[in-house]
Length: 323
Image 1 (spheres, rainbow, N blue to C red):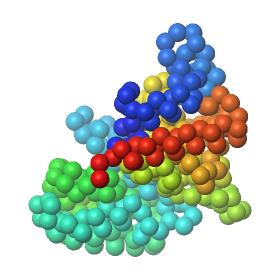
Image 2 (cartoon, rainbow, N blue to C red):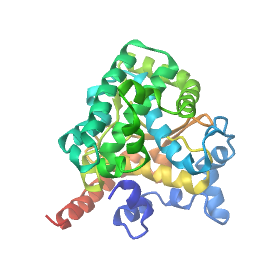
Image 3 (spheres, rainbow, N blue to C red):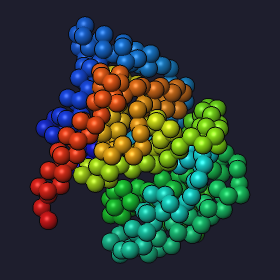
């Protein structure tokens, strides 16, 4: 059960613990004067008033908007990481997805054929990342990586027994597979990436000066909640990229509880997270919160006890799991 699933389940002890850790965040944007005041203090009003400047392309059919949004979000994560230090295709979740399919391709129809196409396309993607800086080429490559990651996240059966699996099987070869990626998806990723270049340049400069940068960070407590991982950590700032079109109070609460959950899952404080940020490419906007403000108390004082208690809760959950 993922952290996101826990946070959606009102009966989950994980959700209850995280919500109790940040009572003002739990209140922010709810009905009544107190909810309105909490939302104002945490900057929700500014975010919900944002105009969406880069919407999902009009060419995307209504029935395909959800799948488009999921792939575009995953692909943009890769596109961003291509611009940041130390990007290594062999150390990505996409690579893990390919390996997972390779270990048991027969669980899906024509699984060996699908693996061969994806594996060769992965090699072409490597060459693109190394040698072709054109924005559309890199956006195309990022979609291939998102497809491979979905195999790792959902498993080969769930990821490939659907439109994606049929799409891949229709390709004659790996070049044809890459060229078959929908143009609106490629342009959407490129359009969302373009306004992020200044902030990515700032992060590159910070990393060049020796400020700690960790892409796709994992957390010691993640094993208890399905292996949760974040987008990136820069110095003490945990950043999540969200490609949502409509910014609402409930969505902001949920997103910030997810980030707070990640910070608490770092039970040994190995990443030193003291701030969290949401990067919104479609608006575009970047907002940062101190953990002090989310917790309503000094994070340096509060985090050790909270993490100890959270670690105890997670350990109990792991012990209770059937072997």
